[in-house]
Every structure is written in C-alpha cells, then in structure tokens.
Amino acid sequence: MDEVDRKILAELQRDGRLTVTELAERVRLSVSPCHRRVRALERSGVISGYRAHLDASALGLDFSAWVFVTLREGDRAAVGAFEEAVAGVPQVVQAQRLFGEPDYLIRVVARDLPAFQALYDEHLSALPGVGRLTSTLVMKDLISDRPLPLGP
Image (cartoon, rainbow, N blue to C red):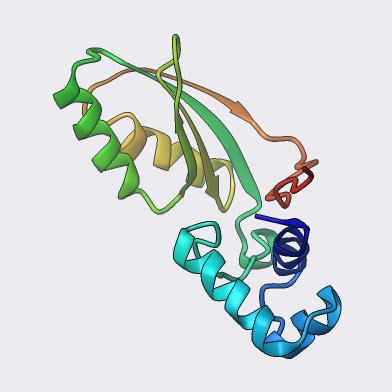
C-alpha cells in the first residue's frame, strides 16, 4: 500500500458515496487507475464494505449503555453459545471479547431507560452462560465511528 492508496482510503472513509470520477479527481489520478486501485483494495479486504451512517437519536434511539459481561464458564462451548446468541440481539451495536475480567464489553442502544431495562432483564441476562452483568450508562458520545488513521 502506497501513499495514493492511503489517500483513496481517506477519501472513501470521509464519503463512501463518491463516484470513481470524483474520487480520482480528489486523489489526482485518472479514472481507470483509480478504479483499479479501489478494486484491488476491495479484493484484498482492506475495504470490507460500504454503508450509511445513521443518527441514532433521529431514529428514536436516545439511550446507550456499555454492558460488561462475565461468563460462568470460559470453555469453548460456553464462549461459542454466548457469542452466537449475542450476535442475534439487534440492540447490541458493538461487542468485544476481552482478556481478563470481564469477558465481554458490549454496547447497546435503546429508546429510553425503560426499554433498556426490559432488554437487560429479558434478553441480556438470559444469554447463555452469563454469570454477571454490569452496566454503565453513556452520558455523551465524544468520538464515535472515527475513521481509521492511515499515516505511514
């Protein structure tokens, strides 16, 4: 990956809807080489997809929380069952497996506190293998979905 590829990626992170012509103009390439580079970045997996960024508040999802999950058991079956089940909860918008305690950190969104409480009581606490849940409420998002740094 060279500096031109980094410029292409930076522009696409800012605006994934750019046409190849617009992108080529911004990175100072002709259209054909720019298109070839974008396709190569897609084939290599550096560009894994394109999507729209939605405003949670505009959709009525004004409540957000981080939930720390500790499993009762850490064996392969318990981990697999938990990960499969948590992937099926639409309100979970981020999930990471951690080293040490707790085992997982998940971010959930909901309409409001009562909706979060129902999610917590009816779904999150019922996930397979859950030994303990601890949550902290998000007061304000400072940085969210920031583009990746592309420096050398």
